[in-house]
Length: 246
Image (cartoon, rainbow, N blue to C red; front, side, top):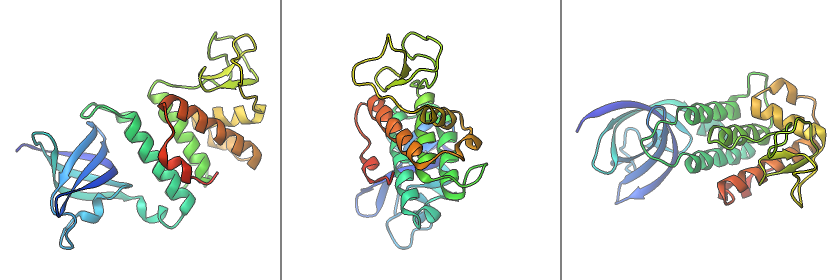
């Protein structure tokens, strides 16, 4: 079987037979990849611990008929080690892995932006952002907004998401795609504070310096809107989101 090298983040695993596992990964150049790791559940396995969720690995893969086969695995980042000691960060990371798995649907199709975004978000969770440490929930909100934008669901936090009327506007509707003017406002739209909309815009654009002076109430409101927007566009809630501490 022909072999090739690939870098990937392990999203999830499940058992196969008595000693094998199927590893689902988000790779750098081939998008979502599923591969068989033979014998990794044995205590004598050389790379079983490197193929757990949160692992960022460099792989040698062999092309198979339906699934790839892991021939070699070298660890690049063991994100699971620091996250396992921090429950809020661990649960936020679980949501990131599930989101990446849901957004990247096609196997074997390039998804470089999603891969880079996931690696960067896990690194920010485990070691902080370029502007210093941030609460795990804030790093998660930034990841969700940016991942949805890459997938084609970019929210608007200033101009009307329906008619394009220049903002700022006061109402927010996940179904409409973000803030809406009074003429386009659907019934039941939220009315977040201007500070919350400013925070959401900063998280979407990665402007971490602009997130320092905002209070916990603003952060909680931003998290609620991000969760609602994510659930709407993924068409159902993320299972792991129920365990996130907001």
